[in-house]
Amino acid sequence: GRTSVVGPMISVSRFNDFDDAVKLVNDLPPTAGASVWSQDWGVGYRAGRAINANRVWVNTDHPHPAEAAFGRENRNGLLTQYWREKRLLVNYS
Image (tube, rainbow, N blue to C red; front, side, top):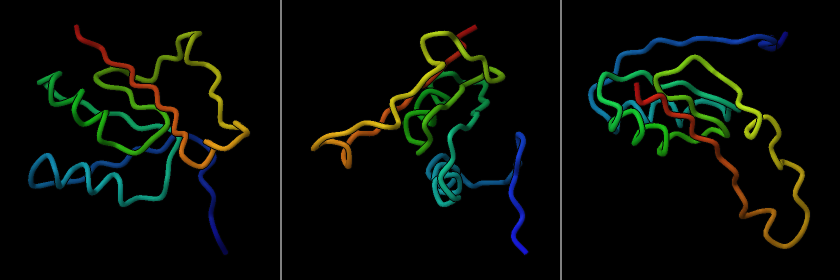
């Protein structure tokens, strides 16, 4: 049978460089959210932009500010197939 993940899941993997890390994440099945942790917030920000997920948290543990609580996944109209909404939440401290 097929197993569905109902709660949060964490994966820790080795990678060779920045491009390898982003490819590793983007080759996984689509996800609603991902976290990036880096000592260099610039690298974290770059990774957050490159990862294909609706929400990416950088150096933070999944806060949900009010303005990011509801997405617009059910858009209608001509641009629906081209529209991709993304929220990037970065902790600079």
